[in-house]
Length: 205
Image 1: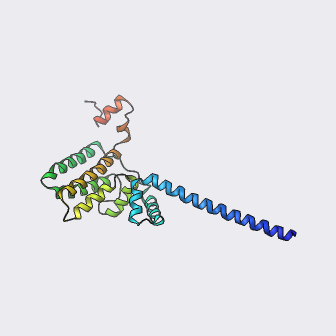
Image 2: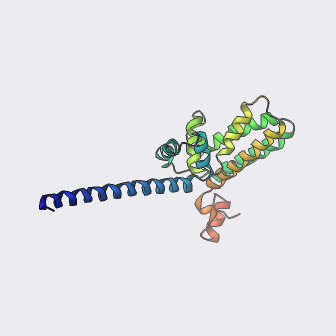
Image 3: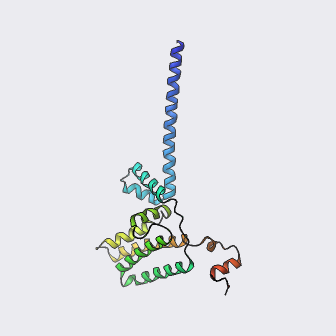
């Protein structure tokens, strides 16, 4: 084998190895990306894949766009009085369900949108953006708002279907309420600090 032939053979071998290495990195990088998306979105990953009819590339692009657009949102804590107000509203609409199930579902939809807006998500007048943002930060319960909206739009939904939608929506409401807690309210640093949380005036009375 001549020197020139040997050099050409070596160059070809190196090129093949480099190409193989690039392919492996690309494939494993895709796998890591898919795994990361699955961990981040949980059941929302499967729902998105289903909506894209099993097209994983389209589903991944959809989820990444949501992350890019709304991943930087930092939900705002709710003042205790606001949390109590929203909780009372939810209790009321839930109690009215027996007499007015469809109105209760509509009220739940409006309340979820209002709570999300108060916490810093896109406003209630931008429902699709709000839904996309909630899917990033509440992927395990965001289906609740979809369920409540589907039920509200359906003129043929039975009382049982409306009830199930309200149950799903409640899971998202509770998740929003938990996210909306001030960090210090979850783990008070001291007894004195705990009194300040209970009494905003700091009197401890």
